[in-house]
Length: 192
Image (cartoon, rainbow, N blue to C red; front, side, top):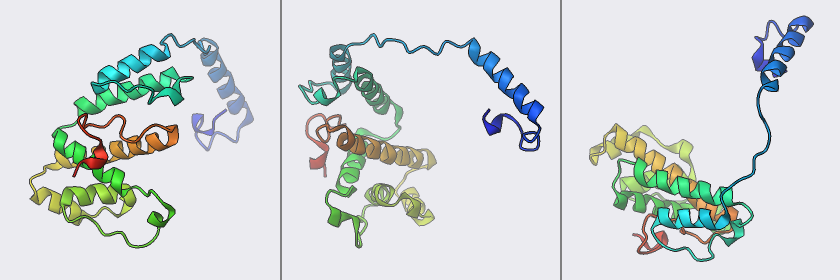
């Protein structure tokens, strides 16, 4: 039985532990835990993804063919990303570009001093990518001076985390970089 099901003071009593296990087993007995077949095909999931990003993707997601559920989850994430932020698309594009440029691409990029960009939004994205624990209240104050309110700063932090998730996913899944970029006209790596 998981230790958090009983308070720590009661875990030492064997009858209580046994009773807890029986209660949990009765609850789980009524649950249907069978693995269900996934009904969406790879082609359908790819079409949904293409509709979400507004353009064709060719064979870019071919490495994910055995996992159509993953392709569909990417489409859902793209749909959510595109409608959830209060920031304008230009700022979101900029954040994605800064994150992609800030991630290490070679072993040499992981050591040494890395100066922050002078722009407050770019600096926030850079710090959030390289070493998020070093985000300071001074950075937040500077962002407020540029006209961002607390909601916009929160959305900026979410955009930095989202951009990091996308950039790392490209690498882990073996997908082309910037495949699902916010800038459909050009790859994010070219966004200033």
